[in-house]
Length: 276
Image (cartoon, rainbow, N blue to C red; front, side, top):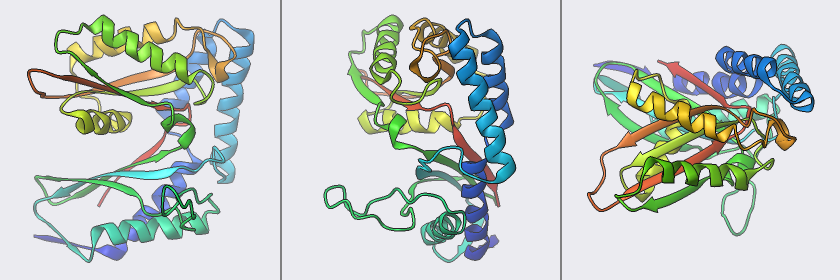
């Protein structure tokens, strides 16, 4: 049994939330560069180049990529051979508190959805925990802004529904979002499970690792192609780059249902993975 001190978790989280807010992953930067090269709208191309420039400045000067520094969503994988010395959730939230305050990141979390009083430290985080084999603690951290989150949708399809009908729902979701969620988008799509499971899958799909599933990969490419035909374009100003990527996660479901959730993420897909 391997013991992990909660203070180590707090330190790692503190650094991770700052890094995620300041620096986009290089593969996403490359997607933006490729999109700028292939964008057929002059205005859209200019927007993409400005996004690349903005990301460079944020990384070099350690300042937020966006003023909405989001709510922190964490997918924790706890190894069966790991013993945490302390409370995992407390350690995570304390790390967020320190990281946001020391990093001068905006506090965007309210204690009560009706009273709307700010917690003052961007906690609590939204944390999901899975137990896995091994002696590591793996944390996938997603910084999720409200502009894109508010445009996300879920629909309960009939089990006889076709892929084309699902694509229509996704296109409708994207068109409804328009410029409101800061395109070009990253789309996380959850298919299967139950009502709440599909929504969770769609959020987790935003940080999914490549699985080598050719069947899903072809569907992702088809959806991306259709989304980019909408003409919404970068910043909603027109063009052929409405989305940069589409990620799908699936789960077994009841014979009488087919839940589909679309979690919209803006071009600043801020996430980071740490392993302790």
